[in-house]
Image: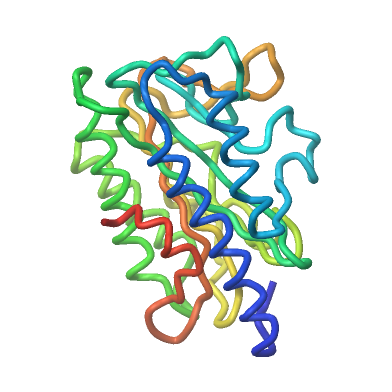
Length: 254
């Protein structure tokens, strides 16, 4: 969407606050021995406390309130009472929701407890790439140039980007134009970011794979060549200068 009034900006800020606080609370709540279903139900209560409704459930009838992916699962993991979190797990939580007609999206990968499997470097790279990308986004900047920045930074850190996942426009629904805000440079993409538009910018930084493939459950995605992936995401409003980060309260850059 494009922000045209203060009321629209306020609505997006409230939606961003709801998903950001829920994501941060879920990260803090997660602990070894807990099932992903229990963590998801906690997230649902957080969203309900804001009066917000799960976006993946509303939009796609996703079998959960949030997406929780563990280990070699890249994204869209289905919460399950059988999936028990363990010390050192690489976990990704993606929280998106609707609140009073406005939609916001955010996500983060993190290590549960001690980094016994040495995933922290991957997580740190993903965070830093998102930070760099957001710092360069403003009205008139080519979308493909931000993709180039992200892939170049990933390669310098020794990682790959997933080429069939990307960020997207958001605001009055979960996915809007511009779609396919990719983590690499599409030389045929001449689109530019527009001032006052709202987008969800996200990283997909991987150790071994360059594509995400869907499992038989119809939702969970893993790498075409295995390995691990880290994702971090903010919903932002584009300006002539630094973007407004609507989901800053998730504190993923802290």
